[in-house]
Every structure is written in C-alpha cells, then in structure tokens.
Image (cartoon, rainbow, N blue to C red; front, side, top):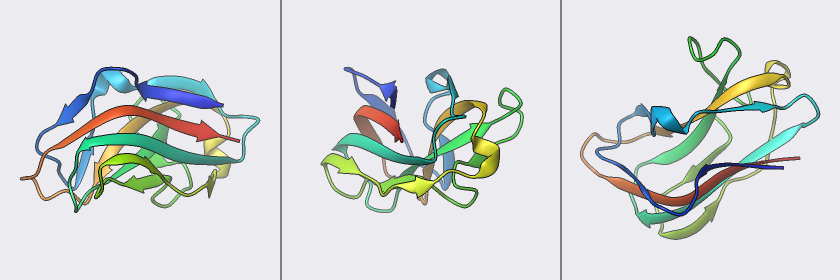
Length: 124
C-alpha cells in the first residue's frame, strides 16, 4: 500500500530546520494494523545536502508524535535530486494501529531550502 503526501505540484520547505513538519495540511489518517514495514519515496527537485525526510505517527490526533520504527525512520536522504527511496524499516508495535501520519525534515540547518515532488510512504 502507498500513502501519498505530495502528488503533482511541488511542495517547498524554506528553510529546512532540524525538525520541521513539511506542511500541516499534508497529514493523513491510515490504518496500519495489517502492515509490518514502511519506507519513504520522494522526488527531489531542489535538494538540501544536510537534510532527510522522515515519517512520524500519532495515536492522539497530533498531540504527540513518534517515528514509525520507534527510533528515527523510515527516512530518506534528500541530498540528491530525482527519485529517492529510503530503506524498509520495521514498524513499532504502537504504529500498527489507526494512526495519523506526517512528514518531517531532519538535520536541516535553517538556511537551505528544499522542494519535493511526488512523495509517498509505502507499507508492506
């Protein structure tokens, strides 16, 4: 299953910070009860060498957030342009539920900009 965050038009993130939600409007609700792994895929049109794109989940509608693997992933580097695909990670037990997802940037320096095209999270 693939959950799309950006389809068609690009989303600009200016500037990217150490932890910044890509866009509040890009949150989505999905039931991950029957899935065990996830990865992030994106199309980078304006890159930021220091930044990665990651996915977090919330069980309480967005009051608190955690990474899908319980640590820092799934994530994908946006240091190169074009299609970028992260590695598969195992979902944390808490993420295997009806959750809200959001995209965040990690490692940004607060100066560089980032522009993303089609972006999705894949689950299996």
